[in-house]
Image 1 (spheres, rainbow, N blue to C red):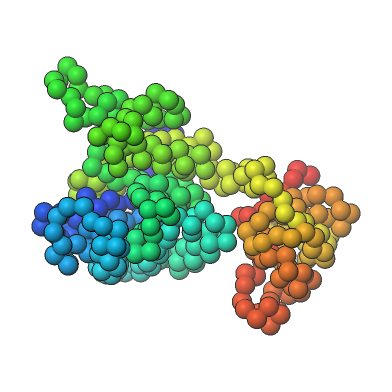
Image 2: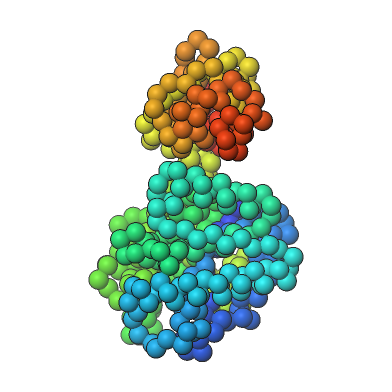
Length: 378
């Protein structure tokens, strides 16, 4: 893809940083800028695209509301400021999107929500349902409970994890800078030494990483280095990533019209990358044997329902990989189970409508959803 339209992507995550959302000196939102961005989002939403926003700003807004003095905050002060700011942030996005007839859903996550399998699945299910309802999930790290040991510390990497979790096609990082340069732009001392903008990155090499600076450099502190790390996460899972300026009005429209940005190219699409991960990178914890009717349904692209399962083997938890076997015991595929082994044993061979009465709660209708399923070649 040498050129593209934003609306050619099915599912897009947009990350908005504190510095472009909040005027730190005035202690207030940049409302005109926010409304221009939401106008861009509404245009994409009208074309039936799935949109998610990863928004910073809770601590900055909390500081403004509480009139805290400038300077570094202690952990407990940051957490308390975030508790106040998250309410303001949620209201801000809700009101801005509502002007275009779009509902917003607040999702607060921690590192564990994207790293631990069970919590990962819960978060993904919640976001998928919001998208199904045509709402825009507004996601932020839950700074009120996250500590230094269990937090991301930057929303670039959080946005990348969210993008991979929901199998997004594209992640846009709206930033203070309009992309990657071969040297920090602010360090240029003459026009002759003017850094070169890098419009496209096919692969993240050591040379590309060096352009972001070292961990100890002033340029990389909370800046380009975390964006390169985010690009590694995203492109490795099949999600394209763009770094573009958020300093201008209508930033997404500017990208679509050919504005300056750096595009990190993913080698494959997110569904393919996810299928490879399920098929080859996860150790199966158990097995499900299914009947001939279920085999035929899977071959037609359907999900695996409990009614088609005749045997459950192994000790696995929800989200673990399991082998799927046909009536003759031969492996036909692998997938991620939506149920623990104990619950799977109870509902095997039963209709999905019976799940609530058997287990005492309403779980997923599928034992393995088709997006969590990989079949072998026939």
